[in-house]
Length: 336
Length: 236
Image (cartoon, rainbow over all chains, first blue to last red; front, top):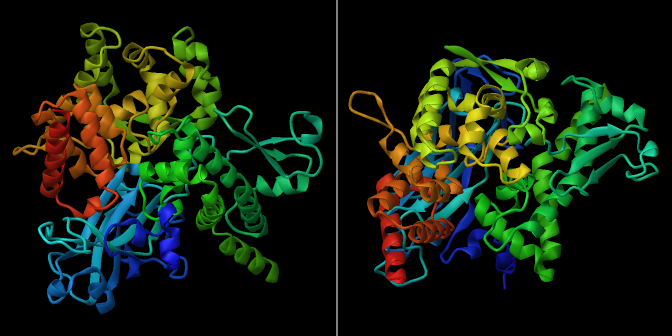
């Protein structure tokens, strides 16, 4: 049994979650250029697949250019022999923006997708997007093949391959209301908060409204955490400390959400919807909220899956917080 | 036209249970430290007139209020998706401008449920009382041959609470072609609540195999028609 097959239960890898050949990272998706209003080039962080526009406010349109590489090996894997000369596929970039309720696409190649490197270029209208925009490539089946028996995909729109996601950060991420918005209290003065040297505490006693407390007894740390700038040592230190806090708090919130999901995939509290909004596709690659909810419920109730689930939660939280980036920034600040 | 404003998160502490029940008023002065202007306008005077008319002509808590009010909310709060993605805008409209409409439309059942109608929004379409009307309109309106907005599908969807709930409480509704195709197929079939529930559920399940953005509206429509046919056969 391959590693991919072992992971079937969590649907972490759709290769085995789908009833036909599929490659989750089969498409090499590269963004090469991003230009604002046709004349302002933006730096691209290829290593983290990130285009950060948060410091740039005066623009109306972003033009994104790049390539999608479709290999011969992929075509041979996802299409049957008799279709490989003229593979019936649609290749596109899915464009998703959670804050503006947007699911759209930019078609790159239609009807037939033989092995090649396909260039793409499309515009994003700023009036349609907010927060973060996720870009992800997909190859799907273009023709119906339901009359033919076999192991290959048959339905129009069936997923055949995807690739790594790129993110355009348009605005500083607005956390869902209240989530991880800390309250600062001196733990030594409040019996209901843990004593000792705790830096933070997630109070879940009111399950409807989890509250994150930071320990005001550590005034030097709190001063840094309350700093407002975006550059300089305090800002770098603040971001790294928040990562430390988030690494502890998000897993608690995700696990509590998982245990509260009912058999219809519904959560118990509003904040749990926000947790799913933030983490659904990171926990279960590309899954929508409903699918992720059902998978979470299943995994948290299966003791054989708990270790794998915890690894996936850790992976998802690190994807979100990107601790290496914050630590490198901090290290570079220290070297100045 | 009136400049729109947003209610900051820190002002939420003033939204008491008594306010949610309608037993306490909040003035603009009470909330002024938490209100700030946004770069957008809306015809709130006309919207006030329309919502007053709706409240005078429909019974309290009548779901048909949605159908009468929804397209007006969308047309008179004529903002971009970027602007509509700011929850604070909707919190201002429900708490400061139109709290009477929220309470007229939604009965107080629990504090949590009512707090959602005033203070939810963001990525959850089926939440804040005005936000949900705006987004359902945004995802269902069409343009007619004269370049005017056609809200006929919006009105039909909002007149059927089960349909609105089962489509717009699901993730696929964020894909406008899917929302439109699903609504049109189920409305044309005059589907019962059970059929609506089963069809949208099976459609959602099917989406674990197919990628919605990779399909045309016609292909999505065919898929939903096939699912509807299966559901009707199974229930007959």
